[in-house]
Length: 222
Image (cartoon, rainbow, N blue to C red):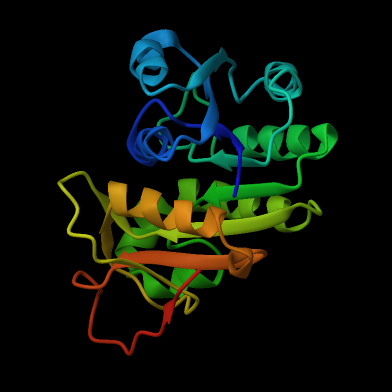
């Protein structure tokens, strides 16, 4: 059983859902925040909050090295650019490099369907719209797989915030695409965290009721 998680991206979205889940499962969590806007909410979830900007390697290195023994780093960062600079590659690169330097063994990265060979699962219009961010996420994935860390990359489909239906699944087939609720992504990442079957895997995450087309689906069970 994993004992201590270092979580980047817990201020919102899938990261926040993971913080809730870890709180419920009583897993010690250190959450790195760039601003203190979500500080009180995360401390209420029993997380230890440390301040650090993922775009600043020195801050990331200090946050990870000061956190004590870490069983795994999980990153859900990305999305909106800060001062014109995205965190999708650079921020994740800093987290990966700091994890390696600190002797952390395991890293779980929440990426996106549309990166790498899963680009073929998305329509051309979506790829054109998301091209820049997907390119950065793909760089982050490649940096992680080359890092020597035990990795798990989870690529969610289109993210929804409504109450989940509990139909989220993982698949190894990169040509499967669809939508999924953020809370279901968090549950799937948690399952990967607890399973050696998920070591060094790249997995897509979709809701089985919201898959594009009617493909044959073989579920990956961590």
